[in-house]
Amino acid sequence: MRRRPLSIATAVAAALAGIGVGAPVATAADAPQYVQLGDSYSSGNGAGSYAEKICWRSSENYGEKVARRQGATYTNAACSGGVIADILNPRDIGSWRLRTRTFSVPQGAVDARAQWLHQAKEAELCGTPAQPDWSWTYTIDSSAAIGDLFTATVKCQLTAAPQIEAVTPQTDAVFLTIGGNDIGFTTIVTNCLVLRSAGGCKSAMDAANATIPQMKTRTTEALQAVHERSEGNAHVYLLGYPYLINTDAYELSSTYDAGEALSTMQERGDRVQRAAMEELSAATAGAGFTFVDVKPDWGGYAHGMETGALTGNPYSWLVPVLGTGREFSEWVHPRPAGWSASALALYAAMV
Image 1 (cartoon, rainbow, N blue to C red):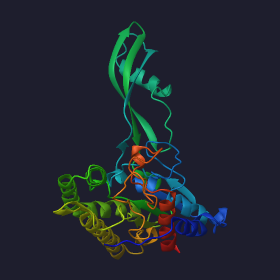
Image 2 (tube, rainbow, N blue to C red):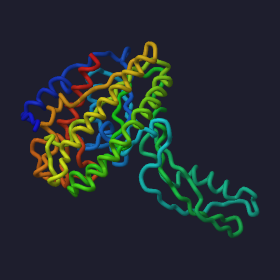
Image 3 (cartoon, one colour):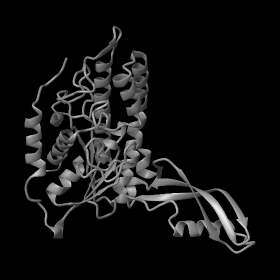
Image 4 (cartoon, rainbow, N blue to C red):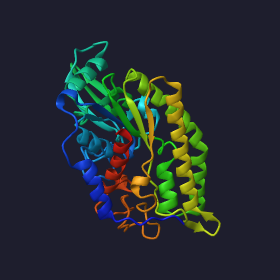
């Protein structure tokens, strides 16, 4: 059984000393430009302070900590629940809603619906997007006309632009975590840590392992596209994930050790993602692709979830399940100390 005790106070102090304190290393004139892509382990879930609670973006995530330290400009396009496909494609986010409004449209107009829709968008009937990469998709659900008055109900769906659009030829570095949701992060957490179902956990783990080869292929394609969009100027840093639990031995039944299965799967995921980055570097002249293993800076297993008391976890750097004052989307995501640990790992890889 692998565990390594480590004082939270000591680790946080080290993290703050290396990341959060001190003058930036760049001036405004030569400030590098950093972009963050990916999922909840990049957007900010668990940090405790958020710009919004759809993508759960936080200024306390690892990338923005490093950007502040280095005096860089920074754009966060990561979004909670993100999958690899979201790097290249738009994504519907949040729940859709209906809005009804009456506008004046010339009686008998052939394009009455189009004219109503134009006015609805001009009036921002669905609302004003809270983030620069968000937009509303308007779809007329029903309509009726009386004379020049045209009434319609529109379905409003918030959409996030493809994350890659945040990358430009001026981008110097791209940070991301990706792949966890592609292999079923939520299903694994639910079955292995919340319900503690041996059968459900094994099924989730089997599905994850079966999907890892596809994850590698999709990651390679997406990051190659990121490289091309930056015109070869951005160095891409792909961060791994910390251990989710604080031990590699966690039996859910006499026949199934979920701890061993989870540990083995996470380490396999790291190897596959590292290999993808190395292959990209070898195949792309002058390109920079680096895999960043965050596990050592997280103290190995020391700060994973405590399997015996999931709601307490005083030593865990992950938000506990049913944590007081925490929401579902924050469960099993980095607390501030965890975000600092990941920032340390990234910072060390960059210098």
